[in-house]
Every structure is written in structure tokens, then in C-alpha cells.
Image (cartoon, rainbow, N blue to C red; front, side, top):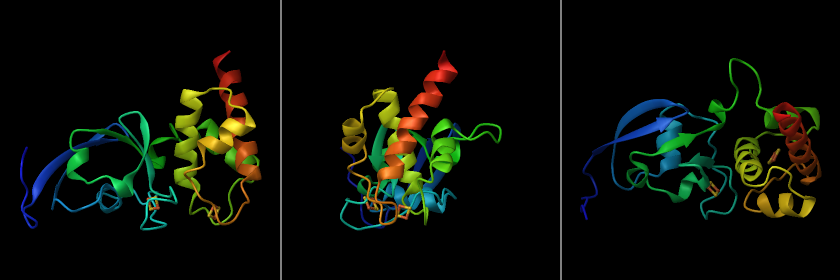
Length: 165
Ligand code: FES
Ligand code: FES
């Protein structure tokens, strides 16, 4: 196992939204900070105790709270942030559904919430209300009261299954 000294800088390589980035960081730097410094400002910080989920990203196909991962741990990984969801200017169905059902107000939790929904719908394409509530239980929202977020995720699952059929 490599031992890092606190001020030693190491180059890490990340594939973010399909593009390769290299950056030099100290071992204590959190992935959330690395991503924000690379320009992915949709990745938000809402707490310092791993509870809010505002920093959620998809890391090697799993939803992860990027405030609980060190940048050096993520070296070599594949990451999706909210900036990577729309394609050619077309919103991803989950983004479309959030807009359609008024599932956001201040928008601070929204990137993390959408990415959690993205992972949930990959795991369970037709989730029940209970599965949705459980699925987003790691993501806090101070504004919406969650009901419209649940509607949005249901709506997104319909849009995705219609597009597939
Ligand atoms: S910033 Fe709150 S869980 Fe990551
Ligand atoms: S929309 Fe404001 S915290 Fe969720």
C-alpha cells in the first residue's frame, strides 16, 4: 500500500462524463472538491456529516456521496455528474420530468437528487412509491416536501419505458 505524506501531491486521472481529466492533488482532498475545482459546479456541498446527498455522483456505475470519497481513492474511475446527463442539448428524461412536475425550488439538492434517481431507475425501472422514497432517503431537500420529487421519478420511469418500447 502506498503511503502518502500530507503535502505530497499526486496526479490522478478521472473519466468524467466521458472525458479524461488529470489533476494534481494532496491526499486529503475530497472528491467533491476535486470535481468542483475541475468545473463541475453541479456537485454541491450541503453538509459535513455525509447526510444530505447534495454531492451525489455516479462513480463506476454506483451512486456515491462524493464528500465521503478521497480524490486519490477515485483515481482511474469513471464518473457521471449532472453536467453529463443532457445529450446534444436534449434534457435527460429525469431532468424533463423534474421540470414538468415542479420537483425543485432552490435547486440546491436537485443535481444530487436527479443522479440518485438516475441510479435508482437503472436498478429498478418501475419503482413503487415506497421504493422511490427509500431510494432517495439519502438525499435531503429543504424546499419541496418530496411529493413532487416522487411524482417526477415516477413520471421519468414512464417516459423512459415509453422511449424504450
Ligand atoms: S455534502 Fe452532504 S452528504 Fe455530501
Ligand atoms: S429544491 Fe431546495 S433543497 Fe431541494
